[in-house]
Amino acid sequence: MRFSIFEVFEKMFYIFLEPLDDESTEYDMEAAIRFEGFLSGKIRILFSMDIAKTMIQNMLGLKEDEITTQRMEDCSKEAVNMICGNFLGKLDSTKVFNLTMPSFRMETASIEPGKNACRMNFDSDEGKIGVIFDADGRV
Amino acid sequence: MSFNVLIVDDSNSMRAVIKKVISISGFKMDQCIEAGNGKEALKALTDNWVDVIISDINMPEMNGFELLKSLKDDDLLKNIPVILISTESSKERMQDAFNLGAKGFIKKPFTPEAVKKILYEVIGASNEKEDRGDNEVFDF
Image (spheres, helix red, strand yellow):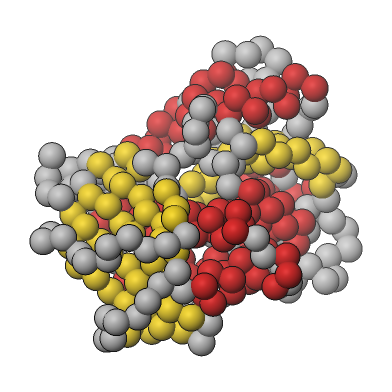
């Protein structure tokens, strides 16, 4: 999972993340996607405002005053979609998974991971992200 | 020689990135048409002729596979080369795509080099700009 997160952020957003132990970070928005297959679950990515803005600027070459909420939503949803697809492909490229359309919200709901979930936090010069991988078992 | 391209993706940002990557990859685009899903793409094709379609798979309304099927069933459109661009890259999904007539597959996240390589394979080196002086730097 970590490798997929690093790969997507480096290739698409030119942001270099480092693992962060501090779990008290507050985030400003969330994008999530659900996947189903031999393993099913949900991936949620929590973004700080700073990193969301940098992602757009780096990906689209925009200035700060050109950043809109719609673009932040678009970019965040694309990030969670790419991380999920990349991770599942690495998990088992012979298996087919169905991915839902990503969702987005400008606030973070409860970020307490469920009992089958794990949470990772990452830091960068441009801001922070949190990733919650919540597997709900084999189907 | 320049070409017309149809980019199909429900993400405005991703369409903008793909367009930019094609441009800096040294391929001359005459016209770049954008669509948010397969249905919009088919509608756009009633009014425009394109040389290549670059399409996402996971889209609302009509996904990339459904678009491929519709193109395959249309005598006027079935020969337009389609490159799928997606996060979904299982071997089975890729084989399904090629069975439906896709000519190339680009896995997200992608580099400009990967896009350039597939474009070369699908539409040929003849489309590359003659003057590529500034295009070696993939700064976008």
